[in-house]
View 1 (cartoon, rainbow, N blue to C red):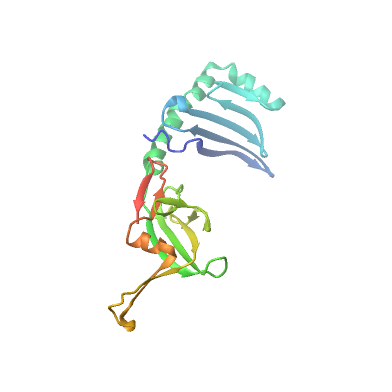
View 2: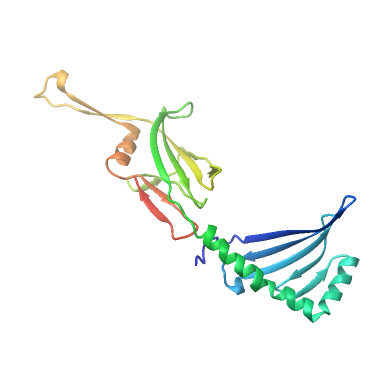
Length: 235
């Protein structure tokens, strides 16, 4: 079980039931299951009845009774609250309806995770203060939350960095792209024993960033999964 799966976020299971629709008037019910684990103490069941988009009566498992919001809702709330059979029926929904379906939701969706595929490339920048740009593209990961960071000499780089939001692929997976602008520099190696034509010229792009990322394995991407403690990937 993943107790920290969603942190402060609340998952919601919703079931819509239409009771009546005639001449443009509609009455319907929505059942909510609010939860952050499969434990009953972390689950709340809410049943709301609506008439033409206006909620008129609600049952919550935390109160264990109905509350009306207009004359018709108050009338029904009092009637149902005085019926032990009716109250027992809805009080049981937290366990019989919510807990059962939440277990299915965790096993089918919330506990799943897929590691990302990462691509790093250097491209010319169309504008900006630097002539070149590194692009880190992260593809096909799930769940959505992720953090992409740039490092140089094991220190995080924050200037001249831009990133997209997590973007949906449309197949439950996500992608994100992070850009780092940089100015290439050159390193010259000369030896008096060598003729001019054979002197070595070594160009190190990205002021050592590309060399560090490719040769020294100094580029790190941190991938945070909802389902577990963050995993670290080293490029």
